Image (cartoon, rainbow, N blue to C red; front, side):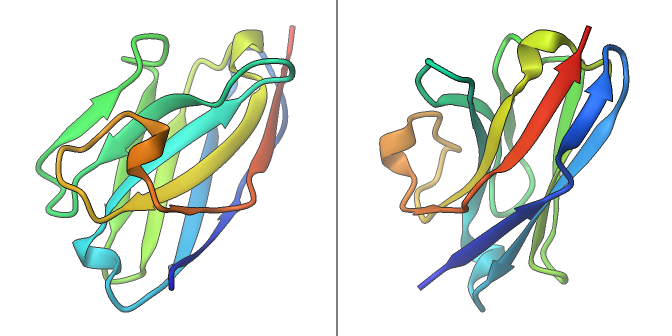
Length: 124
């Protein structure tokens, strides 16, 4: 069983930065593909970024490329999402997800474990 707990969300102004963290309670964290998804009010949950367990592969949604960075510290069982140049359209609940599939995949259905989410609000 994998438990994921996100933190680091908050209310910021346009152009600001935030770093989200996701702490995983599993001994197999280093073998999992990890990702961030987000869900805005009235919209479906969408892919944001993913990183392979070897950290050799990353993938990003077009809407965040060049602004967001995904990273992981396997020694600390922690996933990160550095978000720069935030925009109001980035406002959403951000979820951490884990998968034992390679890729890294972008589809929600490929991820087996989810955190409870952390709210990010960007004011204009």
